[in-house]
Image (tube, rainbow, N blue to C red; front, side, top):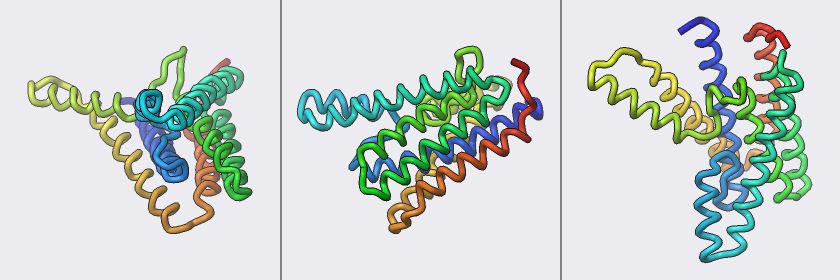
Length: 214
């Protein structure tokens, strides 16, 4: 693994922790919906269609917002390709800051919509040529890679790249624990902290990664 690749993986773990942090807050605020885990919302959409129309509407709305974030983050990343991580993370910081403000004003539904937009955008940070190098808001793929890596280790195959995906998952869980504990304690600054963390990661990216030629 190259030095740059190691930096990218460490940075991805930090971003994954942020995603877990925000997802936990969104889950609590929305009463059991996710702002980064769309597989879970897709299941809730299906069950809601069969049993509870309001749940289906909520899940469908969040999924649409997340998809909008993927598109928005991708377009911003393409527009500022030379500084993609910083540009996308600035966008995320603004969305999280607006969500914090709306929550402060008591507008919960728009705040959750903005959280989903932010989490969709996060996947554009490590996008290259239309492919996402590290999925930082969804962990199913990472766990599959961990499992496949364990199979390889058992069979004596070379390589231990799967450990990076294990760290990615652990970072997400650690972020979720921190977000839930902080929000559950009545801390009103949690989303402001998430916005600040996104901005800080954007600034760090300017130093961490070399400028990409347009």
